[in-house]
Length: 265
Image (cartoon, rainbow, N blue to C red; front, side, top):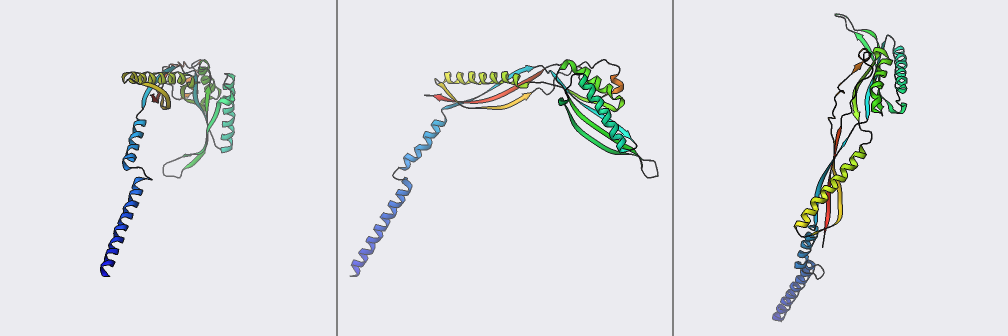
């Protein structure tokens, strides 16, 4: 009796081990597929991913600035704040009228700042004494025709006397996208040419473009500024010149692209 019980227990243990082994094999096999088949899948994916070619290209275009931007400010000091503000407003209106007479539209003039500050004297060994209030108004002016820019600057300065200052005169390209379009075309053509050379060298053919990305867009920050180094121009300086000599110079624009092609079978 004891012998039979011992045999039955051993049989149950063997059966349990067999079932456990089958369960483990099922889980590892992935519904009947073998580990070897599963290991092959990443290799096939890697081969598919390798069937591409990635290349970069650069394009450049030169544009001539055709617009001018400058800042104009009106500084007025009076004993009373209200008087300083009123006088500043009247002077700025004269500036705007003078610019409009030179063909500058009101929509191309943007207010950029308004400051109202008390001004003190600081005598030795005594408390500060209030002298009055200084009001400063600032505006950014866009001149859409380069040939009118010099006269516009001079007119703005002369319209308000010594209270008017003009500064930060800079050149601008009115339509940079037109030049950048040429640079982008050159960049894609260069990338395509290089990719085709690699495909020919390896006996393959370029397929469809999978992705195209503009990596970087650059412009020449230091435009040729001969005749543009004016800084701040005061009224007394502008009275002696009919108009400021502004030269356009040129600006070089650049684009880099990255293109990925599928290699045809």
